[in-house]
Image (cartoon, rainbow, N blue to C red; front, side, top):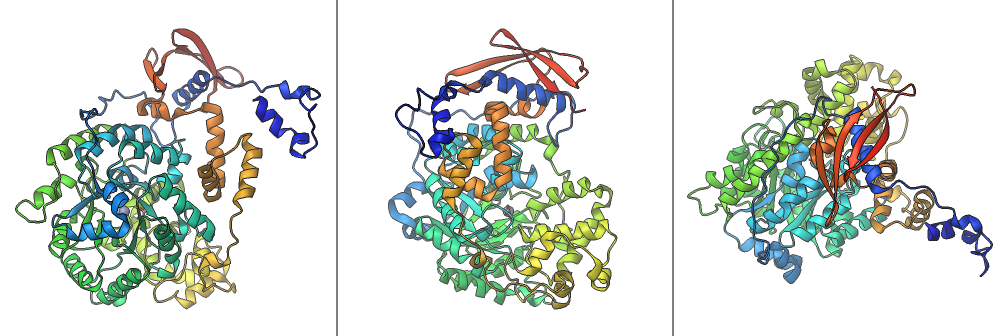
Length: 631
Ligand code: 3PY
Ligand code: ZN
């Protein structure tokens, strides 16, 4: 605090000081009263006990059995894996190695897309960490662990009050052998809008340095021009650029030729020429049907010379059958999840695929008993987050009609409920498809999918039909995201925008046709550093500067919470989400070797000012915190 006072003193900052500065400036010795770590943590527990957690049913804390962590021998060295191949042989060497493999390779998405798609991305680092080293030891033959990017970045700060960079660094330490993979929304990074070029470059460079090896890069309109900057940045950092095509439409449907085989062939070739090490096929909604997969992969294997990595969502229940056909056609790598976190809007199950390929020369080389053990762990973890389940509990073939990405389904449903359209969910889904067709049949994936969702909600809420929009559009205030899409700020869709609708939406504004990044000023990182120093009273890290640049408000809100509650990521998940039961005692390891014992003794009646006193014992000593009752 003393140094902080010195460097923040106006005279010091203006350079108006000399050697007598300390002696003549007594206020340097006035320190703000700080809450200790224990009290901060009790404030959090008290608050969540009294007021609940957003999105979690506010009832008494359930009794959970707790996930079973597989036992491992951590005295043995961790087996070598794909990470060592990349580190020793470089990106080209790894690509060469992939091409030599006969068995299909597996990416485990449980740490990212599986919980993004099933549990609104809510799984906490605390739960991810406990299974990281067991996974590294028990499944060393995995191609990669997808564990970062997509929505994890924003949700970590916003809802879990934790730092996504810390997750990456901590996991990297425990799994030094398997490639870490992230989902990068090209110029939208891990956000929903186009960012300046220097921010994208810096984000890639720092993520690579912190431990990401494989970057799956996609553009939400399959616009290659929007992807090249990200591809180049990944290549420059010595990592793997997996450039992905988002699979849209149905190549088997001859009545819908916009996204036919020729379209995918051209795109694949373009991405290979743009420098992709691996071609990703990102079937984000699970629309790729088995026979289509066979045709698509066979054709693309003849078209490009780089390995092909296939991603799908199992919403229709056809996932494993589709993979089997793709594997028959020669796909190199597929995305799967631990079986207890697989299926429905998530990826197909790893062990199901393993058994499906029994007798095939391409069966993945993994230990199926290990898969089962790890799946048991996730089964226990998933129960903690039951309130974030989407409610979908059987295969859902209507996905072929509405075409909503797996990661969006539960989210849009929540959004619909929030604006009072919970009862009209069926209508919203139908409208989603109508909007797609109005927009000229576009690729729907974050963030373009969000725009389609926003428009669908808007139309249902205002009882608008497609014709109403065209006829009365002049008088309609469209959602901002819709206007931005039609202005070209998410890039250019294949075949352009429907002209009439574009005119109605833009009301005379001229759309842009260049890459949005060309119009944006560079981020001034030094300025952000200075600003954060002012706001937070401390020096910030390079990671924090990037986080602020991407999500200023989300980042500062997180800091505020951190100031109030300290590091609550150390709490077990039931306590984090539900607080404590009266009389319950928990142990919290706040750092290695330092454990607090917390007991909830009683909760006082609400006082006149709306607060309650919550009485705890902390390491046997009575403590109380005052909590505002929000009910
Ligand atoms: C994301 O961008 O988060 C996705 O998972 C898109 O499918
Ligand atoms: Zn996905």
